[in-house]
Amino acid sequence: MARPPGSGPVGTPVAAVGGRYKWVVLANTTAAVFMSALDGSIVLIALPPIFLGIDLDPLAPGNVSYLLWMIMGYRLVQAVLVVPLGRLGDIFGRVRIYNAGFVVFTVASILLSFDPFRGGSAAMWLIGWRVLQALGGSMLAANSAAILTDVFPADQRGLALGINQVAALAGQFIGLVAGGVLAVWDWRAVFWVNVPVGVFGTIWAYRRLREPPRRERPKRGRFDWWGNITFAGGLGAVLVAVTEGLQPYRGHTMGWTNPTVIALLTGGTVLLVAFVAAERRAESPMFELALFRIRAFTAGNIAGLAVSIARGGLQFVLIIWLQGIWLPLHGYDFEDTPFWAGIYLLPLTAGVLVAGPLSGFLSDRFGARGLSTYGSLVFAASFVGLMLLPVDFSYWAFGLLIAVNGIGAGMFAAPNSASIMSSVPASVRGVGSGMRATFQNAGSALSIGVFFSLMIAGLAGSLPGAFATGLAAEGVPGTVADQVGAIPPVASLFAAVLGLNPVEHLLSAAGSLDALAPEHRAAITGREFFPHLISEPFHTGLIVVFGVAAALAVIAAAASALRGAHQPHPARAVAAGLSPADIPPADIPPAGIPRASIPPADQPTTPDGGSPPASLP
Image 1 (cartoon, rainbow, N blue to C red):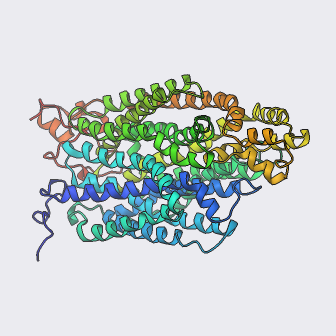
Image 2: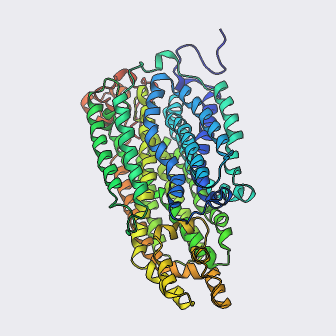
C-alpha cells in the first residue's frame, strides 16, 4: 500500500521524517493559529459598525453587558477548553481533533455573518456563535504546538514553534487593522474573511496531515470526566465573575460587591481546589500535574502567564488612549478613530514579526533562557517608557516604544514556547500544549478584568467631577451635568473603544443638546471636549496599569532565568560519561510519565529547547 509522500519507512519517528512534510505542517498550523488569534481581536475594532448594523445602542442601560461578552466570551471559552481538547488529542489523535477544529471554526464564521435579528437578540446570536467559533479555535490552538513538536527535530523546534507563536501574536494585532478596514465595507466582512481561509485550511489539513506512526502514539486512557468538569466549571466561574465584576452594581462603579460575583469567585475557587484533588487520584488525568516537576515546564508557564496578563490588556489600553484622546486631539473624527488606531499600532505588530522568528531561530542554537529573560526585561522597559509619555504625546516616541514592546514580546514568546514543549514527554504533548495555551488564554482574559478594574478605579474618583464641571462651563444645566457625570466610568472607557463621543451621545438622548447656544453645542460635539475631560483621570489610571504590567514582566524575567541551564538529554549525558546523579532533575521524567516516552538518544533535546553542548558526542 502506498504511503503519503515523505512518510518514510513504517515505524520511522515523525520527527525524523525528511522531505517537505514538516514544512507543510508548519504552514498549515501557522495559518490556523493566525486565523484563530485574528478573530480574537478583529471584532474589538469592528464593534462600532457591528452595533450600528444590528441597531443596538452600546451605551444604553444594560447593553454594556453585550459589549463585554462580545469581547470576553471568545477568550473565556479558549481559556477553559484548551486543556481538555489537548487531552482528547492525546487520546484520539492530535491531527483528528485539530482537523475537526478547522471545520467547527469555519461553520461558526459562516453562521456569524447571517445574523437574522436586531437589537439584543442579534447580539445574543453573535455571542452564541462566537462561543462555537472559540471552540473551534481552541481545538486548533490546543493541538497545533503538539503536532509541530512531533514532526520537528529538537534543533529546529525553536524556529518552528517561534513562527507559530509569532503568528498568534501577529494575528492579535493585525486583527485590529483588518477589523477597521473590513468594517468600513460591511460589518459582516469581519466574519466573511475567515471563511475562505477556513475552507482551504480544512481541505488542506484533511488531505496532508496525518497522525504519528502507531508505536509513537500514547496509549488510550479513560477520559477524565471529574477533572474536566471541575476544571471547566471552576475556571469558567472565575472568568465569568471577572467579566460581571466590571459592570456597575447598585451605585458602585464596579460589581465586585455583587453577591453573584462573590458566589462565582467562591464557587470557582472551591471547584479548582476539587480539581487538583481529583487529578491527583485520576488514572488518566487531563491536567498532568506531574509535568510541574519539570523545571523548564513550570518556569516557562509562570513566565507565560505573567506576560499574557501584561500583554492581554495592553491593546485595550492603547486603543482607548488613541481613540478616546490622542486621535481626536489631532484632528480625527470620532467615527474614524477605530480604523486609524489600528494603523498607528502597526509598529507594535512590526516589532513582534521581526523579533519572533529571529529569536526562535537563535533559541535553537543558544537555548531559551537568555532570550526569554532579556525579552521580558525589554518588554518591562517599554512599559516604563510608556508611563513617562504625556497623554498628548509625540508619535515618534510612542511608535518607538510600542515597537520595543513588540520586540520584547517576540523575543520572549518563541523561545518560551519551544522551552515548554521541548521539556514535555512525547506521550503527553497534547495536554502539555493545552496547559501552555490555558496559561496564556487565562492570562489574556484575566488581564482585561485586572487592567479595566485598575483603570476604572483610577477614573472613578475624578471623572464625574470633571464631567460635571466641564459641562456646566458650557451652559449645560446643573442637574443634567450631574446626571451625565454620574455615568459609570466603564461606559466612558467603552465609548472610547467604540469611537464615540459619549457626551454628545448622552446629551442628545436627554434632549439637552439642542437647547444649548450654537457655540457651546459646537464645543461639546467637537473633537477636543471629551479628550480634554478624560485626559487627566485617564493618565492617573494609565500609570497604575503600566506599572503593574512592568512588574509582571519583571516576574516573567525572573521565572525565565530560573528555568534551567542549557543541558544535554539524559541518554546523551550518560553516553558522555555522566552518572544519573549528574543529570538535572528537569531532564528526568516525573512520576507517572513513562521513560519510554522520552525521545531516543539520536534526537537530542534540552530542557530549554536547544541543542546539546558541542562537547557531547
